[in-house]
Length: 197
Image (cartoon, rainbow, N blue to C red; front, side):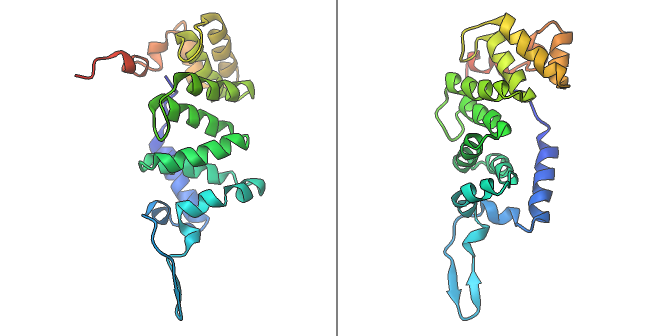
């Protein structure tokens, strides 16, 4: 149901941002190892671990370091869904609408959290109400399809229109095809309805 991203481009950009800021993307997802301090200095310093980033999120977010929120994307793409949820949730609670959409995605798929259609839709609804076009698009899809919310195609189309007015290309395409959701999510909306075997 959720809008698809060009993940390879976003992952590359985020990785380069992390590297340019002086962090090691490999260190972020390495298994937690013991920090050792001896006469030669410190080995495996805690400040380079995912655990450290999560621990210091409040301080970093207060200082305006929203790039920390992008680490949730890196975590989930590496299969570390539990840490991704911790990051996305904290960033979403801090007001980051992109993280709200990601929390929706995590609940929609059961990645690091319980699969929950209603909660998934609540996250994108909140982002949509803040005027975030990706939230508007995804909430519009939820309303049209009745995913996690009472089906309301009229309200869904209005949300899609708001996203299109902001330039969202997927929303424009959906409008062009008379709001046929199979155009933008051809197999995603049917995934839960298909037999597994």
